Length: 326
Ligand code: HEC
Ligand code: HEC
Image (tube, rainbow, N blue to C red; front, side, top):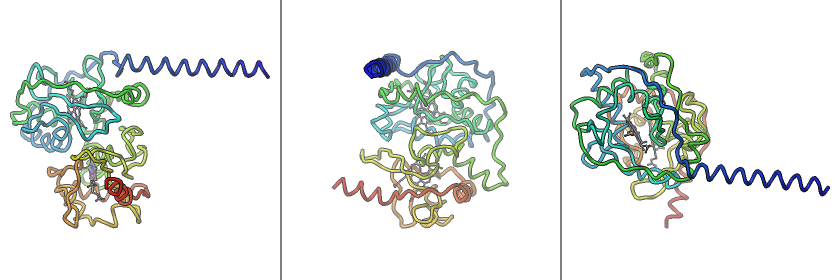
């Protein structure tokens, strides 16, 4: 009996020691660096069509996180990210050669946007990855970054460094990792198929599931529908006023989902203009996605109808948050 206890003690002690060393290792090492990747050698042709399409995608994606108060992409403090993840700053992605991304090659940009890995092997947590964006849409984003549009013109504002929390560092050793670079051509959605267009617009282009699922940690960026609580909402974010804002349940659960509140037309209006059917404004960080077409947003509605329903009563949870505030 005594011997068993002794062995158990040694095993437990070793485990505690091991966990302790791992935490020290994570705290000292921080976000891990990877081998320098082999980036594709490509040169994106800047055409007016690509710049227009790239602008729409950037308005929905890049601008929200990288825009300063003057509508230039010099980076900013991202207050909407819960403090648990640390103090997060986005970067200067204007064409400035020193402070921005003027020196990045098209291949480096494309590789980074797909995988989250920079050319020097450093990994950018929080910055979304875009594994399922079509090759053509991705080229459009790059064309827009290279264009003569105001937001991307060279600006020498010094970007600030993020102060990642221990929790984020830990996540980057366990679950938040660079994605593999796609080995095949990534085709655009079949635009004659509303469900395919809807899934593409919501998951690959809009990254709607990223906010509208259970949390930011249990996500599958490639096989998006395997993400925990896919479109069931309840992910906790921080609003303009520093208050908690829960993301909405966008599934068609009869009691708690979106179908009972929005017709297809009302949904299109809410997503494009940021207003509910009763005229109230959707809270930040739910921003209006004006560049999307009615067809694309309508297709998202059709797609959401087909995914598994999740019962998650966000309205009651919001009411509770309101109560606690008072
Ligand atoms: C959810 C917010 C968010 C969105 C959306 C976003 N970014 Fe970022 N981005 C970040 C953050 C945060 C970092 C810095 C991460 C770090 O500190 O390692 C970053 C870093 C970058 C970098 C690396 C710059 C450098 O100097 O290291 C590039 C390039 C970039 N983003 C481009 C884009 C483009 C292009 C888009 C749109 C397709 C985009 N980002 C969308 C938050 C975002
Ligand atoms: C940055 C995170 C974020 C992203 C990305 C995002 N949303 Fe939201 N969304 C929210 C939050 C937070 C709310 C809750 C706003 C509120 O309570 O007023 C919300 C609310 C909504 C609502 C209102 C639902 C209701 O119950 O009234 C709709 C509709 C919606 N989002 C659709 C979308 C679609 C479609 C996309 C992708 C094109 C998207 N959202 C992308 C955060 C996000």
